[in-house]
Amino acid sequence: MAKTLRLDKILSHMGYGSRKEITRLCKAGIITVDGKVVKSSSQHIDPVASIIKVGEEEVNYREFVYILMNKPAGVISATEDSRHQTVVDLLDVEYRSFDVFPVGRLDIDTEGFLLLTNDGQLAHRLLAPKKHVPKTYYAHVEGNVTEEDVIAFKGGVTLDDGYQTKPGELTILKSDAISEIELTIYEGKFHQVKRMFEAVGKKVIYLKRIAMGSLKLDEDLELGEYREMTPEELEELTKLDS
Image (cartoon, rainbow, N blue to C red; front, side):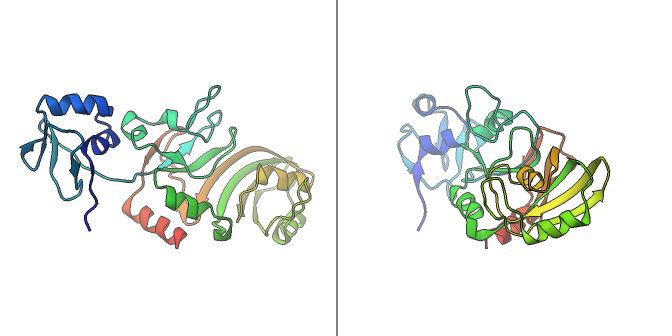
């Protein structure tokens, strides 16, 4: 059965203005559906089957958007905040009109891979604890990270509140006064990576998420930049959700 929506809802969703502004456009005879002028913005339309035009511009309707962002430090993973810039503030108006939100969160001082979408059901499923979607981080750690830490993380470590983490996969890239590591975890407790290293007497001083499941951060994206996911990435996202 075709899904119909109010014309003003369709067009406001696509960034053509507020519902009040779209009502004015309709009354001015600027909006057509399948070649016919539509005077009422409350008319129900099938946005997929119908050809909607605002002036000479055809509306390319889509319900959901999926965005990959290289989140910079100093920006919070939220849709709005009175004190800090949010990841949504970094988006162009055309994407904000979709009411996107970050899937999960990265701490304010953490950089890297962040997925934003308006697909609430998908986000809910990806974040469900039973999913155990792997997330991989690159970090600089104060202190020599050793094979003992690798073994400890593999068995799960006890955090400061007594919680025993699930096993994590720790890879040492460089062991020195400032070590470089990659860590894959399968849950998302508050400040988990930092607290896991605190549990073995070390401190994370730089943290960047580089992957979520098989989806990897696009290294061509500068900090604060973003792009829509490719069809191939959407397919991988579907696999994470299965």
